[in-house]
Image (cartoon, rainbow, N blue to C red; front, side, top):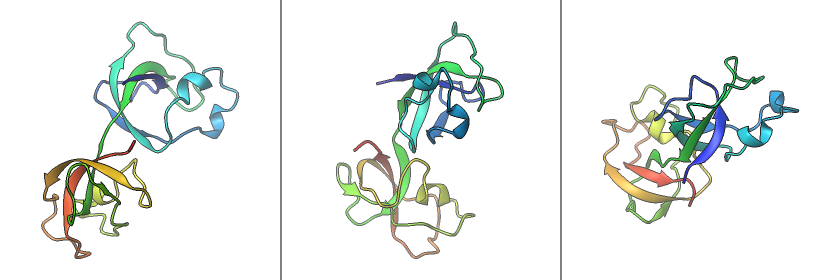
Length: 148
């Protein structure tokens, strides 16, 4: 189900994904707070539609103002321990990884997920993009549902 919110014009394109980080100090006193701050902090969203006839509103955070868009939460791709990794089961992330040059790093430390929470596996995508895990972890690439 989509939610109408306000975001900067650089993000206001269908298909754009972003992690909502919550209220900033500059949001204090803004007349559009209830329309802007209506998403869950730390959650990843995808823009599904841009309200074409809506005006661009002034914003202290976005130099180009903000526009009305429809967004929906998206599942997050992540590497998890392969043991017991099947659709419908719950899992946690294996932990941080210092190897930022690894092709799997973005899946080992995915935006919008926390290391100390359980998530339900929606679907498995098989082997991760790396050839060798430098932490000697046996991993599998999956889609996790951050809402569950």
